[in-house]
Image (tube, rainbow, N blue to C red; front, side):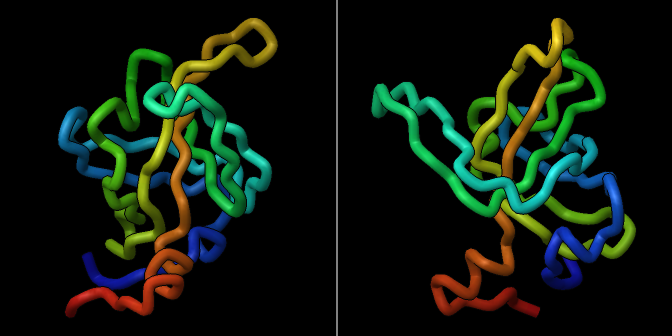
Length: 122
C-alpha cells in the first residue's frame, strides 16, 4: 500500500479491493459514503449496534462475496493508487426490492488513524 486516502477522493462508484483471511483478494464497488445511523445486528452481543460515517460496498453478485466471516479488519484499498481507504467490519446478503444484494460495510481509515493518533508506516 502507498498511503491513505478518504474514499470521497476516489470519484463516483469506485472499484475497491481487499485481501481477507476468509475470502482472499476480492473486488467490489463503493455505492454509498457517509452513512449514518446504520444498525447492524451482532450475534455475539444479541443486539443491534449503531454505526455512523461508514461506507457501503456492493458486491458484483450475491455469489461473489466481497467480505465474509473472518474478514473483519481487512484493509479496503483503491487498486489504481494503492491507497488504503477503510477497514471492513460487516456484511451480508439483503433484499432490495425483491432482489438479493450482497453488501459490506467499512469505516474510513483516515478517521480511525486520527482517532487513535496513528499513522501508516512507510
